[in-house]
Image 1 (cartoon, rainbow, N blue to C red):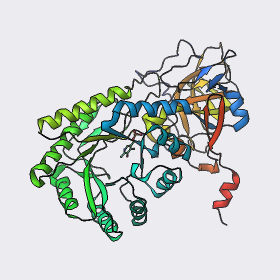
Image 2 (cartoon, rainbow, N blue to C red; image 1 turned 90 degrees about the horizontal axis):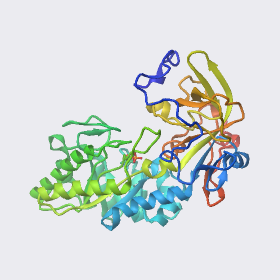
Image 3 (cartoon, rainbow, N blue to C red; image 1 turned 30 degrees about the vertical axis):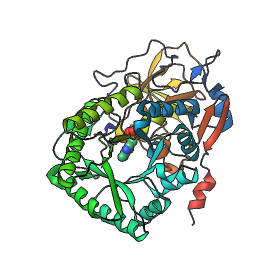
Image 4 (spheres, rainbow, N blue to C red; image 1 turned 180 degrees about the vertical axis):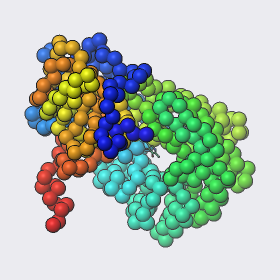
Length: 463
Ligand SMILES: *Cc1c(COP(=O)(O)O)cnc(C)c1O
């Protein structure tokens, strides 16, 4: 699937795939508002600025590469989700997209809840003051120790992922003298991607309990019998970077079908339904994501309609956007190190980071865009591939983009929409140091996650 995984290195002559969206933009210096955080612009001298601070100053003060996060934009997006769903629904930010204590505080202040899926994420959330009852604990293999910590802390919900876990959580809660609120994660046979979805009866994946063959119904039966558990709802998460809402429609139809079966069998109407996350953002000018209020309206109409048809009270909805909150809020600032034209093919632009700070291009064939950030240019377009400094030919940050032909070492370039799944998936490959996250707001910049140092590396390496 991944074009970059060929062991002999990248293929030749795939200059641009046929029908590719990419054509040289009319203006290489323009900033498409769709892919940039809201306070990003160019100042009079043409330098990219965010929150009133220009990137040359940011590079001088904090070094490169760096993730530059627009706090104003983050708060605005979080608020938009919160407002769109109103008081009848809950928004859980998926912490795996990017989690830090500053982010937890912003979420708390903006009224969002938080999904965690490991002890590390739980600790981060609690240490920054997120009330435990607003935390949901996810994952397909939570350890007994993690479950115990979550139950003791009093998390608002644990999302059960397997038959084993139903028993495990019940046992731990009971031994602590508690009754833990839980949801059961089901797989509904819907696999959703950007512009299409596949609906089948079965789903072949590690998460959740299949609706198929009455398995989810059996899980509900067991959970309802256990004293340590209070089953409050059903959870479904169908994919990521989704633009087309019809996958949610099929998922909601199937989940509501289960709620109806539960009512018919047990006389219980479960009060909650969680439709997961996965809502898409614009990585390039080609992407057209929907606004939170449109998504909220669509989802609530779908659930209401399905429940009316099933003669069920409409349950309280929750959603779990990660990427759609934090993704567009940050860009990665790199310094150009080398520029290598390959005649008839493209120009390789090497930056001071790479797959260690953005693995998504190598891992998922993700598409990104890029601009020259430290100045504007009148030069013509140069078909470029932005690559990192790692010892791996698949180390690509932006597969295909146009940059000005006069691009030179020392220039700063910026890759937008790197707020989600970049720092959180960063590695130390080649012992490259993970970049800092710098939050900018109203003319002030501060580090919220500091740059890794060589001392950090040596501290873990105990000889
Ligand atoms: C990953 C994940 C999310 C968030 O997905 P995004 O694509 O970032 O919105 C939400 N819920 C669950 C259960 C997930 O695994």
